[in-house]
Amino acid sequence: MLQTAGDTSIPEIDRVLHRERQWSGELSHMARDGHRFIVDSRQVLYEGETRSPACILTISRDITKRKEMEEDLRQSEAQFRTLANAIPNLCAMANPDGSFFWLNQRWSDYTGLTLEQSEGSGWLSAIDRDASSAAVEMFDHSMAAGEPFESVFEVRGADSVCRPFLARGVPLRDRAGKVVRWFGTMTDISEQRRTEDALRKAHSELQAVMDAMSVGLLISRDPECRSVLGNRRAYQLLHETPGSNLSVTSAAFRLMEDGKEIPPRDLPLQKAAATGQAVYDRELQVAFPDGSRADFIENIVPLLDSGGRSTGAVGVFVDITERKRTEQRLRQAQKLESIGLLAGGIAHDFNNLLTVIIGNADFARTKYPSIEELQHIIAASERAAHLTSQLLAYAGKGQFISKPSVSKTSWPARRSFCQLPFPRQWSLALICHPKNCSSKAIPARSTRSS
Image (cartoon, rainbow, N blue to C red; front, top):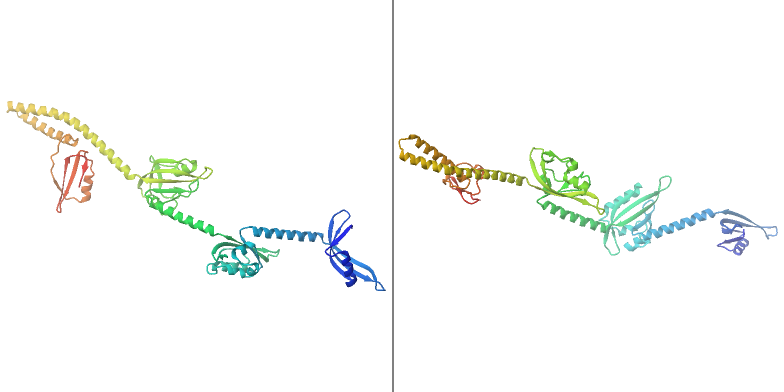
């Protein structure tokens, strides 16, 4: 060995040996190859017959590996404390019974309590016991059972304001499974709570707006549209229970187009979600289990993420069943009106011929009164003229003889009568009295009154 060093110098070791006859301690030696090693040294001074120092017995044990491990442990602990003080969480370590023996600086900064004040069960002085009674009970149960712990504490800060903290605790066990230490963290979730409250409020407001809409609204948050929800009006129009899944694979209704059921992949919501392309003004028919049907018109747009990928779809639809029926009635009325106009044209020409026939027949009867067949010709022509006048009146080119008629039928029956397709030039008037109700139809502008 080239060099020996330690906390105690060699001369001091000699003085201790002469005074106390023994010395023990750690020494650092440098070997000839240049590496340094540490030994645990025990030295004893033996005296000769004249009580003068005769020799020194030294026993040394190489503890270099142990010292390196201790140094690594100190560095690791220092790194852990630095990390624990740097993170925003409140951190703590506790004994197996749950009594705290270490807390990081963040704890003291937030609560205003020192480590000494927080040791043992002192940390509970910063907890609002009334608001955190369930969390305290869960903590005690976990400490007794050795189970991981998670709950929310209301922790009072140095500003006397209590804020919610999510607390988690996990046990460290030895090889036998016995708890030897607890590690715990507390995370401030007050901002998360405020965000959740704001989201709940926004969701409530959005739900109110959706339920106030007079149109049905559908939304699916997955590209396959396995789960579809709607607003209040959607559930009403589709005859489904509020809150149920409106996906066609789960609902009782069927979607039809041109009399055929639409395959699931071609449904507007599914197609928009799958392709990322909007679908506008698509008319469908919904078939219900009771056999009834309704006509809808839909607009569907996909929901896209920041990368432009489809994550679902949202759509609105309107019930156009009554509009379809009205259009059908209008088309029927237009057909009847066209027939009336055609009949009126024919009747007009025929009426001109009848006028000539009746005039000539009447002249002939005056000249030849004895010919009875002329009277038959005139009578038949007058009947034809009366029929022609009715056709002209229906077409709006003649006049009806207006006569009131008393109706003893109920109002629903009279109402169905009012819905008959009259020419646009007609006006229907209903005059109701306590004892009877009369009605008359007269040629006029396209108005109806009652």
